[in-house]
Length: 115
Length: 112
Image (cartoon, rainbow over the protein chains, first blue to last red):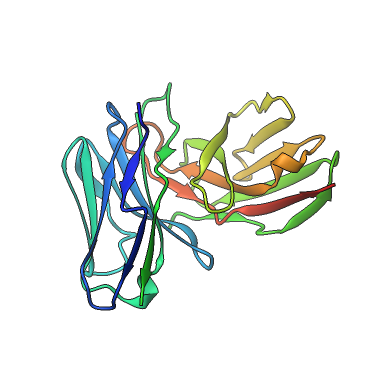
């Protein structure tokens, strides 16, 4: 398996533009997480899906952020409109979600810069 | 509120030293615990799970104290390659329907 695949790896955009980050989880994994990492705040959980259903989105900063998981193999995180304070590394992670295999596997992240 | 607290460090130690990291969590209902490692500009990766009885993997030993809501990681005979940020992770529900909450990490720098 290729692991968790995120795209793009780097994104530079102007303030006010829409940004869409993409994630393909590992096949067979039924939980998917979106995290944001900054030096100041560390790794923050934004939203968590289980079997394609959003379970906890309490970490989503505000209405400018939205996430979808239309099927088991694809998820998006959208920021509209983007602001400079959204600059961060965004990670997607997935896991099988069983007692035997609780490890979460991360993608390589998307480094977002909003200017 | 789900919180995981760690000493950010940095811990600067010489090769061969023993170093210990601690972590506390806020929710007594937490079920699963982990240590992840993150190298600079890379994604986090699982180092080891933490079990109630404590567990060891080579030079690494993890301990869990549920009564005190406290997790520890001990690294013996540290190597230059151990330099990284170590993230304490708590699964606040356990197994299915779990949220993985990360601490901000403890930075370790092993010097020659």
